[in-house]
Amino acid sequence: MHRPATRTLVLAACASVALAATSLAYATHVVVTLPADHFVAERPRAGFFATLGRNLGALGLLVAGAFMSLPGVPGQGILTMLIGLLLLDVPGKQAFDRRLAGRPRLLGMLNRVRARFGKPPFEAP
Image (tube, rainbow, N blue to C red; front, side, top):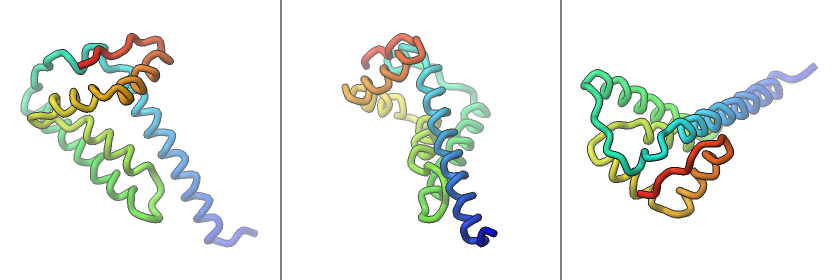
């Protein structure tokens, strides 16, 4: 019979793998579903309540990611925080996104993911 500590470690490892797979799948979904002109087109700001709801969800992901970054807590904390930052809607975020997407290595990586799913590459900012 297994000791309780071993069972707990196995459950924690399984939870960590499941959360990592979920985070990776969600990040891939976001990259694939964005329009090809996402980093060059101006996007109109959403209404107050839509922005509030989106920011609350993004803050929830940031807090959850920070919690998952603690030692002994299963999950992909940094990836979850990055997804939260992507969803955050604050002034100046589009300029920040464009600066990040302007890096050739990052844009190339994003475009390879999109190509794997048959999507056109992002337009360079």
